[in-house]
Image (cartoon, rainbow, N blue to C red):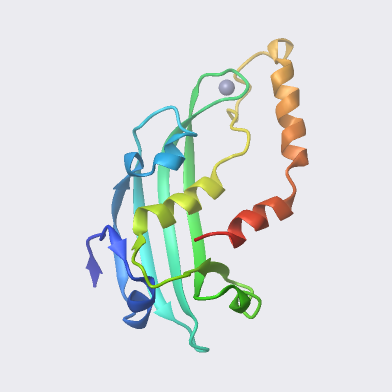
Length: 173
Ligand SMILES: [Zn+2]
């Protein structure tokens, strides 16, 4: 049974109860995500299942889809970006348990038993899925007008190591 999206959740309890949540959230509820967007418009479709696996690991499987607006780094005009994020997060109550997780999981560290702001969890996943250097798929400027910014953007893309991405995952709250 699907319920409306609560503002705050107790993830461990939801996992014990095998609860599913579905609903919509506005990007205006995600201030950190908004910093990367050029428009406050955007609705995130949220579909989440909480459960416990066969080795008793509580987890959350989520799918978040939305269309947001970012600035194209090439032509500096607004562009639409479709996001379809799938995540599988295993809840751990202490950092030492992260190592023992089955490899399909990303760790979700719950350091205390406080309720968690649901929008913030979803926001983290969406931020990780944002394109590093958003650019229109089509040649939005003639090649002769491509700025040096475009070349710089390519350099940035090359410099971001996968380990940096991993590091952000591991510090997820
Ligand atoms: Zn463009």
